[in-house]
Length: 478
Ligand code: FAD
Image 1: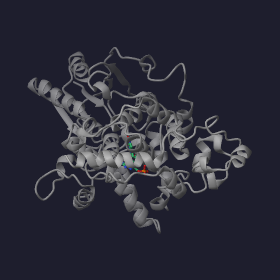
Image 2: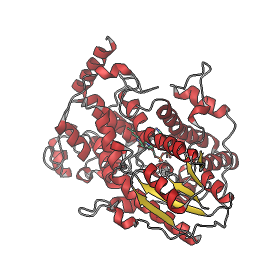
Image 3: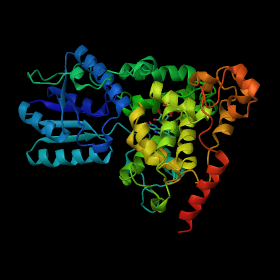
Image 4: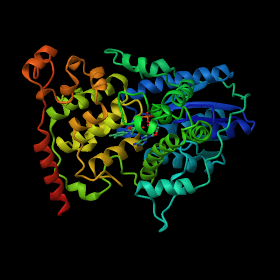
C-alpha cells in the first residue's frame, strides 16, 4: 500500500522531514501536488506567485523524474482531492509538511478527522519554520507580541535539528493514475506576457535556491548589516521566494550561517544580524498562528475606527510607480518588473500609501499579494501592519518615512533610482531625490519635464504628514 506524500509549501527534496519519514517507512511513495484555488478564498496565489509556482513545480517534477518517480498533479479543494486519491490508490497514509495559514490549518484538521476515523495514518511534519509557534510563550504563558523578547526566547531554545538528506533511493508507487498537466493550469501569463523581468531575475526551484544561498555567502554576507539597507547593493540574500515555497529549509540556512559565523573571519556580526531577520519571519508566523485574523483586521483594534480614505487616483499612481517621488516610483517599478522589492523600499512605499495617502493598509497588502513572487500571508500581513502602526510591536504611528530624506540617506548617489526610473537618469545627484527642487534649466538639460515625462509629486509631504498625525490623534483619544 502506498503512502501519499502531499507536497505543499515544501517544494524540495533536501531536508524535507515529512518526505524523509515517508520514504523511510519503506512503503511506495505517491508524490502529489494539489492546486487549490478554492479553500484559500481571497488568498489563493496572486499572479507573480503563480508564475513562480509553475516553474517551481516544473523543477520538482524534473527532480522526481531523475529519481525514477513522478509528481501527480491534481486541481480542486485540497481535502476532497486527497480523500479521492486515498481511495483511488488505497493509500495507507498521508504525510505532509505543516502550514500555518488559517485555511491551510483547517484542511489539516479536516483530513486528520476524516482519515484517522478510517484507520489511515495522517502525519504532519515541521520543517517550514525554525521554531513552532506553540513552542514559545512569555513567562505569563501568553504568545509573544513583541519581537525582541520573542527572538531572545527563540535563541534560548535548543538549536533546530540538523538538515537531513532524503535517502538516495526512493521507492515510488507505480499505479497508473489520471493526473493534470502543468501547462494546462495556466499559471503563466500569456497576453500580455508580463513575466520577462521575472524570468531575467529568478531561477525558481530547489537548485536555484541552493545557488542563491551560495551566492549570498560569497557576495552578500560580509557587510550585510549595513548593506542590507542600501537598495542599490545586492547585499540581501533574495531567498524570500525560495523560503516561501519551501525550496530550501530555514534550518539549512540557520546551520549554514552559524557555521559561517565561526569559520569566516569578520562574519559573526553579519551572520547574527541575518538570522535576526529570519527571526522576523518566525515572528510573523507566530503572530499569524495565534491571531489568524492578522491578514484582514488590525491587530490593535483601536485602528478599526481609523479614518481611512478611498483614493483611487492616489492608489493607481502608487501602483504604477508614478507618484513623483523617485525612490517610491523606483520601488514600485522594481516590484512590477521583477516581482520583488528591497525591504527598505517596501517600508518607504508602504508608509507613503498608508500614512501620506491614508489608503487602508489592506489595499497595499492586496497589491503586494498579487505582484510579489515572495507573497507570503504571514510576512506580508505582519509587515503591512507594522508600517501602518496597527500591528503587534509596530513602528510608532508618528514614524512617517520621508521618501526624500530616506532616499538621500540610503540611495545617496541615486543608483537605484536611475536603474528603475530612466526618465531621471540625467538629473544630477543633488536633485535626483526631489526633482521639483531643480531649477528649470537643470531639468531642461536633463530632459525632465515635470508633469510631462515624469509626474510632479502627487501629494504634499508636510501637509499629508500633519493630516496623518491628526487622524491618529483622533483614534488615540477615543
Ligand atoms: P534578507 O535580508 O536576505 O533576509 C533573509 C530572510 O529573512 C528573507 O528571505 C525573509 O524570509 C526573512 N525576512 C527578512 N526581513 C523580514 C521582515 N521584515 N519580515 C519578515 N521576514 C523577513 N517578506 C516576504 O517574504 N513576503 C512578503 O509578502 C513580504 N511583504 C512585505 C511587505 C511590506 C510592506 C514590508 C515592509 C516587508 C515585507 N516582507 C515580506 C519582508 C521583507 O521585505 C522581505 O522578506 C525581504 O525584503 C526579502 O528579501 P531577502 O530575501 O533578500 O531578505
